[in-house]
Amino acid sequence: MTTVTYSVPAIHCGHCTHTIEMEVGELQGVQSVKADLENKKVEISFDAPASEAKIKALLAEINYPAEGLITL
Image: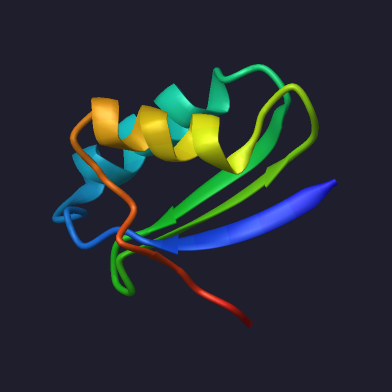
């Protein structure tokens, strides 16, 4: 399993976090999604067939584009 954390500055409220968690969580292969309103970041754990490219494309499609990968 791969876990990535993206900076998503478009997160402004609880509705934003809920939308991201629901939409990305439905992507096949995604195991968990945690959107953080306070820090404006999203942590996603996934296996194939999900990929970083598919996740980033979906985030952009739902108007929450990832602006960078956060390395821990």
